[in-house]
Image 1 (spheres, one colour):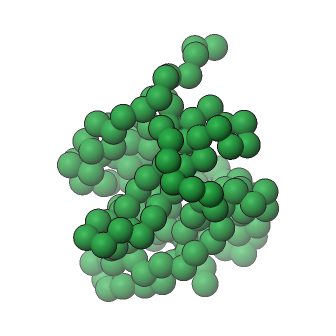
Image 2: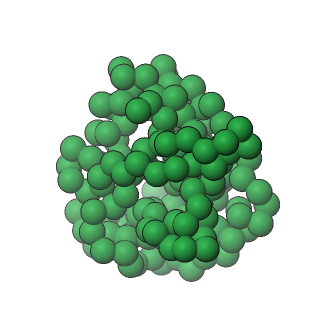
Length: 153
């Protein structure tokens, strides 16, 4: 399977081009029956919680779809924490205007809970906006609670 469904900061096409230069964005869609949440606060030395998705009937998550070239797949697994054991790959069905298709997502291996930093939450909302997410979806992201913002460097 070559399709990857990005739901967090990887919604940003420029970010994905940097990580996976051989893997074009091929569309957008929704993962039905899942919701965006946060997990891992305090794990592995992170400042705040990181994005993940969990099954949740009636909810849905906006995603960007990428056709990931085999050259880029290992790099993406490394960047997303699969090799470190923080995330695992899970296959989901993505609903698009052209029909449903299978794609993989990265799901945090620990428990749900915790707050992201304000900076990280802003990055996710900005990425969703760049990917063409609906205004209400972006507004919902911007309105979520966050932990203390990262100190300015």
